Length: 283
Image 1 (cartoon, rainbow, N blue to C red):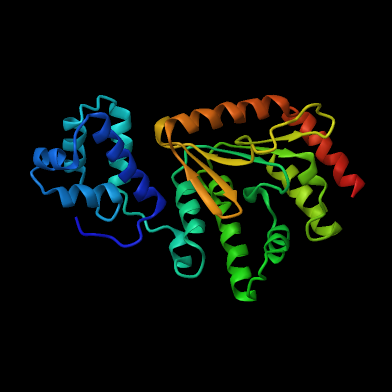
Image 2 (cartoon, rainbow, N blue to C red):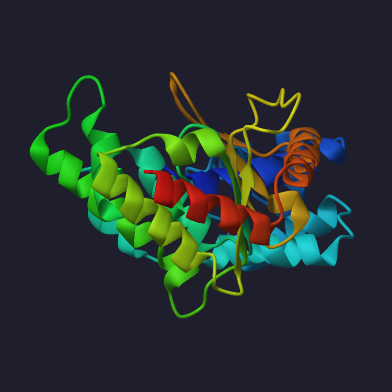
């Protein structure tokens, strides 16, 4: 396979998983290369995501590494043989790479969980709400890039509004619903949009109310995207220094537990809808 430039987050994830399998088998890159009949440079390129790996070689590597998890190997094979050039590719070179990586991750996700404390979850946002958020960025975005970001965010909604939507659950703090992003009219339209989407069978919206005592999970904001198998799940978190993709099994376990804890502390879907209706009337 030829070398690639700037591997995507999905390609890097495949590379990381192959390296983890090799290390778990106690083999060096040189030993792995000898088993495969290639040189160690090729193994290094595969494990850095700069070179692809064929289905045949991937299965041989999995066999050499004594990986008996067939579902996991099938999921890795699907990643290795995927040649999809998604809609997000039109933004390459125009938006930050993390935007494209998130779109690719969402496109391949089997389910999605969101926890948001200060803003409405991206997949639920209206165009006016998203534009108002991007307009607050410092330094200020050029008009052209701002509109590209808004359009990109609206296209991302395909995973819950398209022909084959995935199960989606959003847990949003009441604070995020009360903040009038973009002004009163935009905030009202945003709440109406959430209520509309929450009626879909595959979408669940829960609210963490101010009335909840001892809510201490202020660092729980996350995007949790389900992979082909649980080992390939991914957590995405935004911070002051950019977007982070988290994929170690230990960390994934922590975030699964955190999400379930926040979910249990929130209102059930019906009571959440009642609260959103109430907030919409108060705006």
